[in-house]
Amino acid sequence: MHEASIVSGILRIILEEAQKHGATKINRVNLQSGLLAGIEAETLTACFELLAEGTIAEGATLEIDVPPLNCQCQSCGHEFQLLKRAFHCPQCNGMKLDFEGGHGCNITGIEAELPDSPEPAPSNEENDNKEKL
Image 1 (spheres, helix red, strand yellow):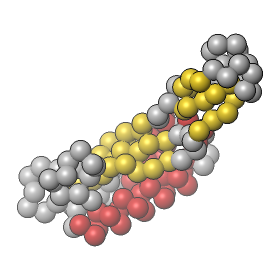
Image 2 (cartoon, helix red, strand yellow):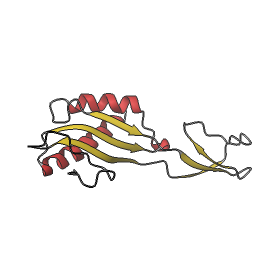
Image 3 (tube, one colour):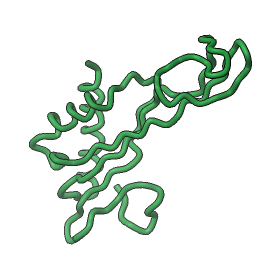
Image 4 (cartoon, one colour):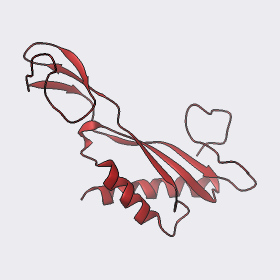
């Protein structure tokens, strides 16, 4: 189960960022995981809950986004996006596919409470006027 080592790394990063900004509580962590990363969302979430116990991330929500995987069939040339791990062309049912991306796992946002801040401070590009972590 490689999810435990992935979560360990995620926790290390988010706790370091929280400490840099003086956060008192982490409420939400947003991840983007590629379809080919081999990460099982349920297992990752369970590991996160377990490993976050006793830290300021305890009770935080882990949101995992898995974007579509861009593909092209080598047999018929059809371009399409995979939404789940069903590696065949929807046009010709061919299994020789070329992929673009789909391997990474990235932290895309951290929502945390800061001292003297009644509301969580989101960390993502959509909220540029608020405190970011």
